[in-house]
Amino acid sequence: MGGKNMEMDKKGMMNEVGGAFVVSWLVFSGMGQGMGTLTGALVLAGGWMAFSGAHILPAVTWMHIMTGDLQDSNHWMNNGMKLLMQVIGAALAVAMMSEGLGDLSPAYDAATTDAWEFSLWAMVGMIAAGAIVSKIHASCDAWVTAIAIMAVSGAYLANGDATATMSLMDFGSAHNMGSMLLGDSGDMADVAMPWIIHGAMFGIGARVGAEIDGAME
Image 1 (tube, rainbow, N blue to C red):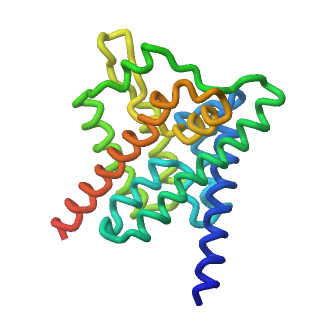
Image 2: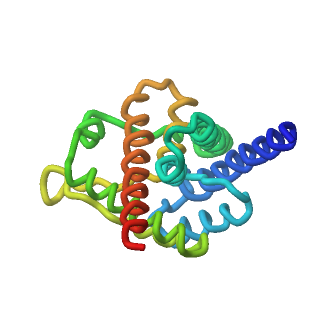
């Protein structure tokens, strides 16, 4: 039984790598249109259907983390491995695309670093997004969740003034982490912050939504 479970875990991790590879290649790379497009939503929905059980996006993994048993160490370990596999899958896609399109590493600068400074409304927006998407994910088919993520990806917040905006959620954080690991890792802190913080806030929103849903039953 233990060997079978381990084999199933390996298959799940390989599905995570494969799903992240496909989405990074077709959605987040230099030739992709981003997650806030219909193409991005269709590729994500197709990835979920083709790679059974894969989360593909870090935010989705955090959603499962925060709505699961937080006291279970295996729960944290399994989902932590999924986060790692997503970065590996994205890195493989970036490595392949770099051969034809040159350096695809994300460009981060001081302005980008400032964008990740604490913002109450950004946090509230991420939590709200997590609550909404998790409810849809629990009640609807995969393609509906993909459409919801597309809508959230198109949401922007004012950043400092009316003309400067930043995306509410960075669903491409695994892709950026993979790019950074293949580069000089000089901007690791800037890339890691949305990978962790955005996902965690999204997951907290999912937990809040689940608690509210449970209280209303």
